[in-house]
Image 1 (cartoon, rainbow, N blue to C red):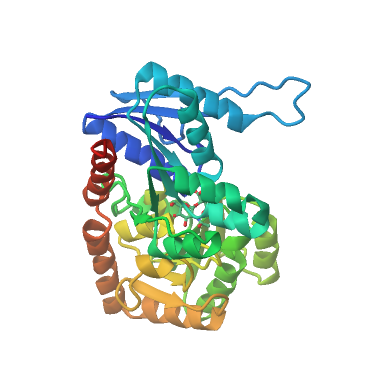
Image 2 (spheres, rainbow, N blue to C red):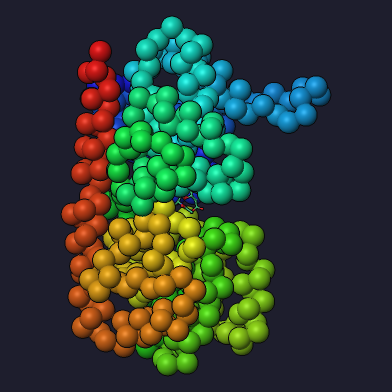
Length: 375
Ligand code: GMT
């Protein structure tokens, strides 16, 4: 069994979810897990045997113009590597976590192996600030192994960073013990959803890249064809623009803004269709969560989304921003009960086969075994 340090951004977000769920599963298998982060990861909500948490405290001396999170993290990592005798440090994001891990390794006298998992945000950051390119490439090339959450992200990383570093694809996964369909008539009644209503759902952090306004426009077209409700789950910068659009379209009675929610599987269980219409998406963990609850998805032909949704099998892939095409697919799926049933069943099957927790866990464990046997 290995001693593994894990660093991620602990707040809500797919990468934090994956890092934490992976840590929990590894701990269940007997590995000793040490989270090194600035807050307790939000999914680490009780005491777990074999899991320890080391808090990064960032000092704020007046001479520092900006609190030095990266240096404080590297110092904490070095401390934990030495004290806990870590074998592996698995960091999520090259920027800044892989860089901090490399610095930490140089500070200690232990040959800890560094694994970096890319979630897409490094590449998004590059689109905004190309001066960081060399540093992200350094983080990737100095790691012992690198993984990415989709083939699309591997290709994009290689293209943007001009690196031929080998990067393994290890897909995201969902905990099937939590994400499954449960019938809850009471919840539907609570939200005023009628028996005949088709329920569409979108879950995100409402950043511009998520194109939530396309979700609302699609819903407007669907709602002209049938009784329907739209659940908007999450919060973020585009929230008020979305509110305004719903008002302009006169859809206030049919669109429910639910804000951030913890138990998303309950909301997915009362839904019939999931929309993810992003312009950037390295994987789309929310798609897997929906599929596990038997909800077919429509996504854009962007990033890793086509690796998650099988067009015509578990949902549909549409062109970015093509609201007419998206609403055509949505209406077709919601009107044809047999097609919907087939896609719902196939979605669950794909989660259990291609994205099964045990399959993905095994892939990470194999990677750990390989780096530890390299000497
Ligand atoms: O989607 C976000 O904005 C959050 C971001 C994160 O860092 O958690 O999500 C990224 O990582 C997830 C887990 O691997 C992926 O499922 C998301 O597709 C990816 N987001 C983007 O690429 C925009």
